[in-house]
Length: 388
Image (cartoon, rainbow, N blue to C red):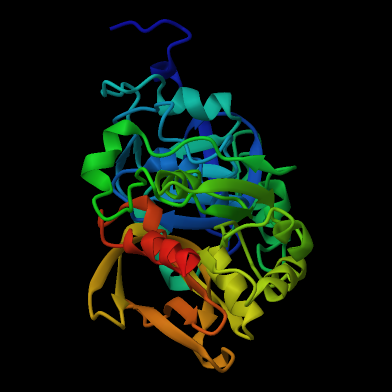
């Protein structure tokens, strides 16, 4: 069958992904054209590529999907997790160019092109993932304009590492704002049976969410509990946070290495004991730093929707969604801080709590519904802390 000249199925432009260890993968471009560098990582989720694409925590990274066929259900306007795409590139084995879903408004190819993100398909993603698992996450260059292997490898080797960079200033909001909406109607009954549903007579707690690159489903959950949510930039000081007179403070997820973010750690340290605090992902790591902990880089990180986490208090195992390349060392935490959750794959810290300060955090994403209900109780715990 003849295809029109502008039909994306006719696209056969070559693209290459070069790693800093000298490995080069050749495939076919989709999405935008150009050249970008970033830390090459992989995500093991079978679905949820739209949420992954719009997660600001992927700023500075080229994301590889391990599931072989991506794009099946297209793109819709409801499932985005931020206002723009922050990742540097997207890698899959096979792109579905004719999506089928009643909510789909756009193909993945068109979506990446409109957002200036390069995609590459047709490479051996199993070999790429095995390389990352063996050698660790590393810098890579994804290009449709320079197809010389030696040149691309040299660029990858000369590009900066993600360690030590402050990546949150690229993705945080510029000013304070009130968050307007709760969860989508189609999710309420099926996805949130354990979320406190606000009802007449409930106190409307005021939460200030410090945004380091926050996924939008987090304030949606807080709003669904009946909270007033004020979002402030990740550079906000303790004085600026307290000026809003909150009942509680939320610390969001975000990209990259938490160790350069001294200003964020200082703000959290100044807030400890003054208001209940709940942190997720990067927010959990920053809380750990404020409590005297140390951070180390994982070899290839935890990125996927099937990470088993043990709640040490209840003995229950939660199936969780995760996206992080750094972890908190439990042995370095200040006195009074307890480790509440651990990852059953590698025994790394997944949750901490300091009862004296009324502060807790988890490394995973309870709003992502991987379980799907396993971790929603954490939002209720935050509400109870504010109530008490």
